[in-house]
Length: 141
Image (cartoon, rainbow, N blue to C red; front, side):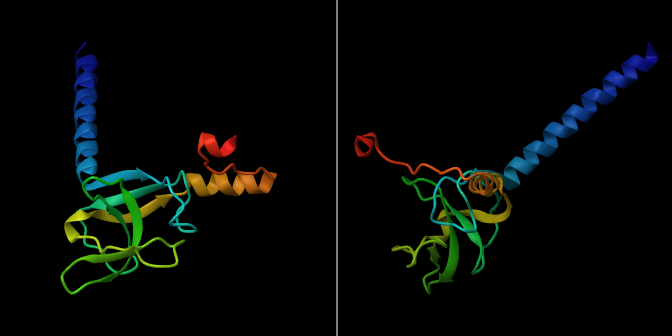
């Protein structure tokens, strides 16, 4: 009987520690699913980017831009302006983004990419499957 209580107490402590660890990791890191083509070949649709929140980016980092009223964007830092804003650009784009991003809108920098989308893309290509491009319903008619 005493052994069972001890095991139950160990399980409760383990679960509490696991919840605390997940809470801390959630405050420090965020997984972001890639949904666009602007960062190819570094990021593919379906990849998961792990973003370190509140970390200072440097030129070359892929950052998460969280501008109020806009969708989340993952783009690369290409420079800093004299007034403290960040100039970004998608790897697949030929020119930098029109407007520099205020430093406050940089939610974090990518520290790891889990290549789910890239692996799926390679598998499709190896099997000869075509990937349908996204089109509106009116364009398909």
